[in-house]
Image (cartoon, rainbow, N blue to C red):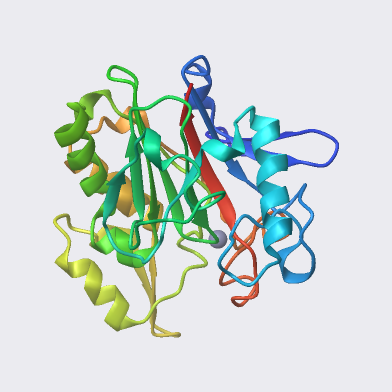
Length: 274
Ligand SMILES: [Zn+2]
């Protein structure tokens, strides 16, 4: 596996971890699930962590129990996003614990979560779209965002920096950011109408989108576009790590929306302050 990410496993479970977060292991828990180690069946086999995509709810809950037990997280303290491919961000507080898992969500259209409260596990869901982890070690603040092409062009990663700064005095220079397993620019094919959405961004993305004129298709590098956006927001380049793991090329290990033609479960990105 690539040097910015590695697989940790026991007899049945495999999870992705990130070396840059290892030195903060006394302060945070950060991981990304794989397909392995759960109880779901069929197209959701086996570690599906999405409740809202047609899987058996008891199996999904059991998957969360297995996944969180391994990470030493209390599953009742998880808070799950409500993803709409937009750039809205929720500040998660003590009263939100369990929402989306053991209690109903009382929010919607939330693709980013931030908190400075310990023992709340933030979760976003992914199957090709980028998970983006934020950690401010100085102020002990964490954030997690879901960024597909829409969230990326709406600059959710920049919004995360702004929101952490506004709510918790985060200085972008202190942020540690990981962009986890996602579909890569060799695999992610888009048409011109989607490509044009990238033209409206605050940064020049032209060097991150290639064109195949035989196929008349464009290929955006979503992780690198987010990285460029974060650098433009003042995050230090050396503090941003890309996993360089493509979900579509590793579809035995990961659910991939494109790779499995929409018939798939979801991975969870998870991040908690200890
Ligand atoms: Zn790929």
